[in-house]
Image (cartoon, rainbow, N blue to C red; front, side):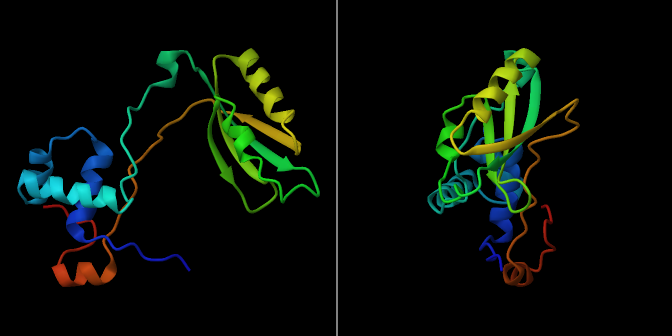
Length: 171
């Protein structure tokens, strides 16, 4: 059973604002959620300290930097080697944008970025020659209608009831 996050309605609204614009000034965040800028700043610092906010980064357009090909690769680890963690090997390949461990037919799902199909072939071969990789299947993406949506953060049920607000309510 997943543990319920301890997010109150105000923190949920702050997280929504920051996911949409991580550079938003504290005064504007405070105005959006009904508090002063310094109070919003204090809340954000607490969310960072709790590890709920893990960091801030620029969202770079892959095509603008020449990474025109997006692919997903399903990786099956060699029989008898499942005790060996091969994620560090995948992390050494710069074109692997994300690595997910799976329950199901495959063991890993990798998100790959490449300049073109010849470059993708090079990246695929590099993954395929990684120690303990048994089988791979690669799917090339034609288009991405949306990506990196903000997480749908709802306040904890008991906190919502106490505040009298509907989950996800905006002020």
